[in-house]
Image (tube, rainbow, N blue to C red; front, side, top):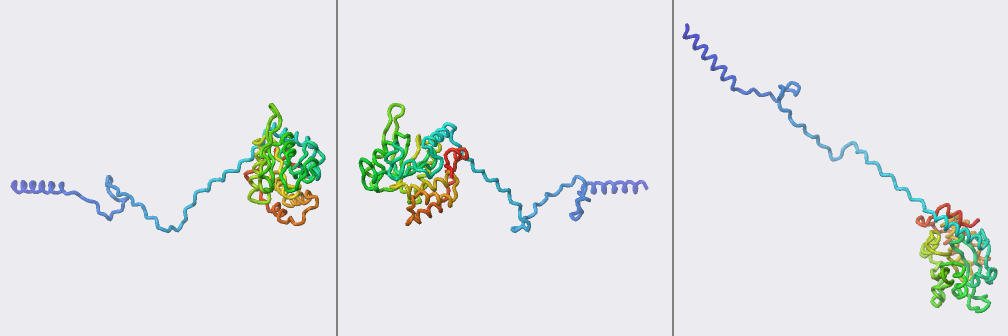
Length: 293
């Protein structure tokens, strides 16, 4: 009996050892919520994004456009100077002649014809007094006579522009005047006004004067002071004073002294002109230099 009990005990011990060495694995089909505590959690797979997803991603907002800076006005001192020029010639509108068709009316401007204010203290227009010159008359199709250049210099002008090329090569390109601290020069340029591609060059010079980059006003002239000088004056009023195409065309016509026939292309240039954004000026500058209509 005892022997049978010992054998049974030994057999039972061997059975426990065998069971202790066997590792139990979790079946793969057991839901995750039912897995044993401490079991390794498999890594999540990143879902594949289809090549053409049904939902279009919301685009990033477009940055706001940088506003165009407002034009910087000229200094108060310069604006005062422009106002002084306005009172100097005693004209507030752009139609009254300071010198007449024969070059008379303002002795200090002798050598000019049909001189008119366009932008006070900045830009003036007219012709060259050759045909009716009292001392040295010559053909009308010429640049300014020497006394015209000298008088403009002594008046304080810094620049004169001849709008045709005829005989410009024989004209002086600089005229000196004054003495001591008042000594200065008038530069005489030639730019063809009836070529639209040249308009920005001329308007840039006028803009430079408005901004104080030129020490004195500009006189732009043709032969009679009617057509080419009127064209540049008209587009200057459109550029710097916001005149409409119709206002500028009517201005051009009125200042030809009735000589409009055959100049339809010039009128068209006035109407077709597009103001240049980079040459805009401030309201304060407009208030001082722009003429009354």
